Image (cartoon, rainbow, N blue to C red; front, side, top):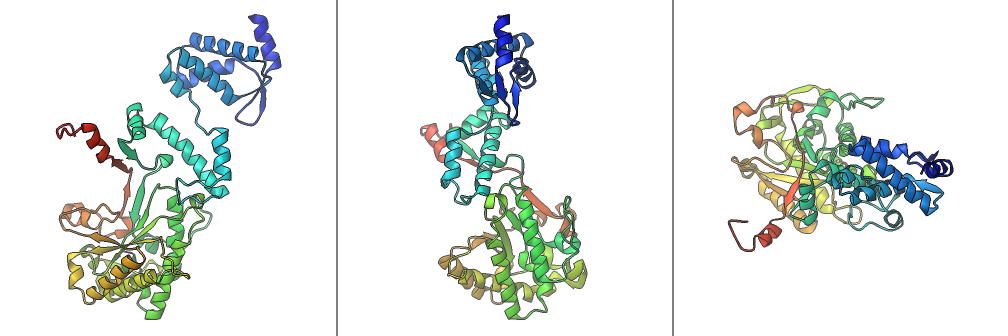
Length: 414
């Protein structure tokens, strides 16, 4: 046994995960098992000797760390140490899958383009997805997800919240100042600059959230910047807004940026009497209620752009416009004409989403106006709208048809 060990130590080499060639050292198996699987030292030493003997008998001259790990895991399984095997597991892709994903279009996610950046995202997602099921969630939760009892969204992005919603008020007041950026920008003087801040900030937020980046009261926040513009200039700016977001596909993995823009035709009660923030982050001396006509001009211009489509008439998939229908919507002049326009957009291009705001219901679509209108004690710092934001931590979908099937007709069980 001693001679075999010495011979093995002299003749075997291992290609490590750090792309280095290192001489064989059985103690590394022991150290890894103690560190990762928390097993007894004597048992770890026994497993390392068994693996060493198997390698020596095979005649392999150059090993890889994945192969050594697989051999160790096989020994753990033979000894009934499934928990320890999971802790000692290795996450990754088989060579066949890597080759297939690099050479061929991935058809599981239409939003991920087939490009070097896209495949980088696929591999990163795959490893984090395995990590989620192996290490973050319990075995029972992972099994239920895999079986389809429910679906945990964004497993490949387990280290970040799901989605967020905020208004433009923070950018309007403080400009674009990011924690790790070399340069910063003062509050915008012009609508076009504010839009540039909005687009850049959205792209940055995409790297910190799994799903949709939502912007609340978009047409209301821009209104103080548009009051001096002609109708033609407002239409041009609306076109710029839609095109900037629809063509932003150079961020995470080459994906398009999932963006929702919440739009209002009437002035929400939570915003009506707030002091309006205008160019350079300064108060305009008016409330947002005073900009109602500009709010309505802008929303009409936005939906006219969506109705027309792009240069070839194709619909804009993103950003997604969400029109809020409130009780006050029907009292505004021109509401019927706007609704006809919006319905035309929905029928011809399929863009519009409708959000029916009801006083007794908190919205789940990403905006937060109703949440703070229910009870005055919940308004908190609503008078400082640049402090208000909301995030969804996780998204889980219950598979009710499957649960009904498993209940086999027993309503009590269901």
